[in-house]
Image 1 (tube, rainbow, N blue to C red):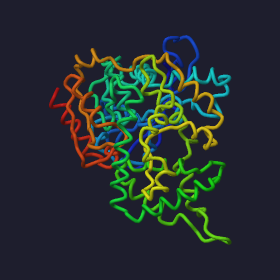
Image 2 (cartoon, one colour; image 1 turned 90 degrees about the vertical axis):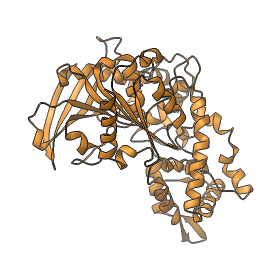
Image 3 (cartoon, rainbow, N blue to C red; image 1 turned 90 degrees about the horizontal axis):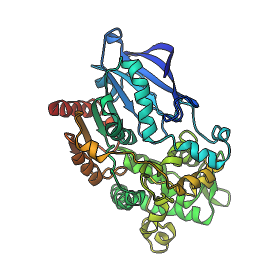
Image 4 (cartoon, rainbow, N blue to C red; image 1 turned 30 degrees about the horizontal axis):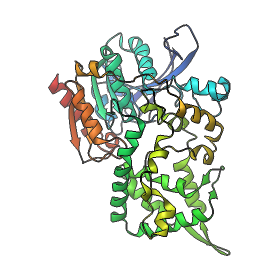
Length: 437
């Protein structure tokens, strides 16, 4: 592993250093092809020259680079009071050798692209972390803070390389250790229904607004700026907003002025279309769509577009049925469907690649229940009651399966509690972990 420090600069209250690391694409072939990882080191300005322990932040996703934070917002201010922080762009994301519709054709056709993408799950991410850790910390273990999918990665870390972890902290990110993707979505759809019901109870005027928009799109889908096809199903997928603390409010504001009067009637406004495009496009994070179901794959069964298949078990999500029966149109949640690889220009060239990944059966295990049962690493997890993205019951089962992990179950925050709760959430988790230690 090589580490190149490319720049050091300042923002209010912090000193930032860019790191670029070279790691193997396939860690089982250390002399083979290499890719680049990017990480941003952050230290409090007043502690710049001090020897500090490290905290590694693993972003949620999959497919998202680490947040580009300015100064010391959210949880970061609390972390910088005692840690030097590394905000890592996990492989294929952000500035780390991106994997997208522009770069993946360098690998060859869809089969070669799918083979390449098997190296972008939590197991490879953890091996990346272990490759770069000794050069940064001098060999010392670091505290790992995993948000959402970052928590899935942290569970893999404790399964495969616990010696690299001083303390493990999870925020909305304890996965089911052995559930198939079908099980994940079969548990998810009822939670999404409850989020819909809560939204419509808060904003009853949105019932008719959503019905009107869905009816308009069922009659004639709209091509958004940039070529994204807005169908009724695509409109329903805006329900992904309902899983964040303020998402219901943002969805309400989005719906309230959707139509404008035009010659001959009404049309969806340019402003509405542009906002929707921003929410629906995967141009900035295509790995989220490509690998979303693969993060649950550990056995010999294909994921086989699990969210799409399981949706059929919940007919209330059928927009045409809802409109015919004078029912509310339900929004969906965190799900990926085949139609998205037709509707989204950033995903269209990758449709066949996605299909090959969905049919794949040779996925390796991501977690080691036996090793987790003998865990010695101090660990604590924020588990959000009625988390729309990660099933609370699964999280609590996994918390019980990781020896010594202390869960904090709260309904004060939604899935983005590490942002909304900021210092309080991190402070609580550190206290719980240290009390156990």
